[in-house]
Image (cartoon, rainbow, N blue to C red):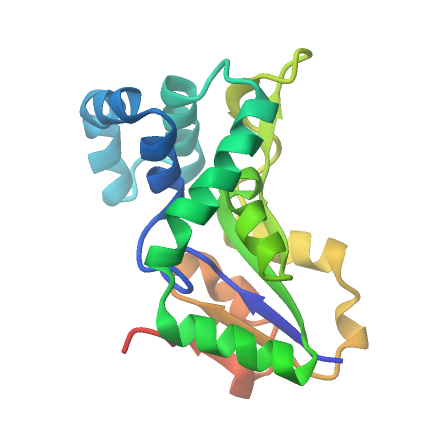
Length: 198
């Protein structure tokens, strides 16, 4: 059997699903956060502010205190209402091709798993994503549970989930530097960087 590993944001989708979910879940707090956090966003863009910290800043301002069960339900509506419109046609075709080959397919994303899992389940895809921390009442704390799922963390989680030596061929698809370690899990001929931008 073969294994196909896909990044989501920018690879399968044409925009950032994490920010799209925050806007969908709480529009006013999201836009207010964009204004308040603008200095940190600018520092992030010049690589002077950590990706994980900025993600937690947004989560704290927009979703902290919300019940996990409520957000799981919201994610079902989000995945039905918003995700289809941002899927790159070439990515959709490639996923179907892998399914027709009988390959195992996993979405490996820095977006919180909770936000994309309903879409993955609806398309018979596995998902590895960033995990959100909750308190004793199962409400979001605004923090991540563990590290943001990008870079070497993607590789660590993939290795924990899949016995890579058992796969005849590994394919990988990504579009940013945070995907490069995952891309190198695949044989050179099966690494695809920004493959669906036509």
